[in-house]
Length: 118
Ligand SMILES: Nc1nc2c(c(=O)[nH]1)N=C([C@H](O)[C@@H](O)CO)CN2
Image (cartoon, rainbow, N blue to C red; front, side):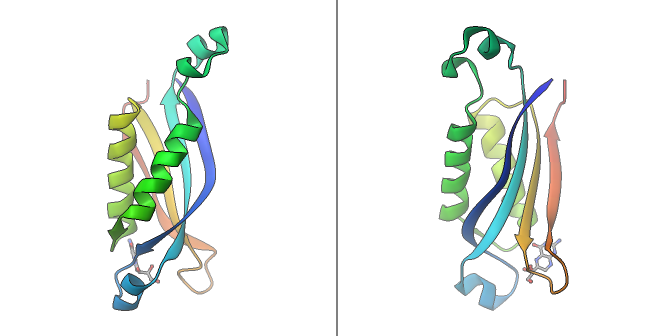
């Protein structure tokens, strides 16, 4: 299986378990690895034959900006489901972090894998 990736995508959203967090927007940081087969696009050199990382990133930004969550787990699961459904991705690894959320830590968050890695 090949991988199309998106690294260090930063989006502002409302996320957090505390009341004050539900009244602000914070930056979340995403790394995505998306399973695919690049061979058809590599042969044709045509954007229509590949998993378009620009299209995925645009859709991810829209979903993160438009929704609010308490837990990063809930946000990560919603994103994974959307990407796999809308872009026919059979396997993905998604890292979702909140930079600076915990004093002394650069970032906290989750890394999830969903689907079957061929
Ligand atoms: N496993 C998790 N732990 C915590 C979360 C979370 O989303 N998942 N969130 C918080 C708070 O919102 C924190 O980020 C505020 O600094 C605490 N623990």
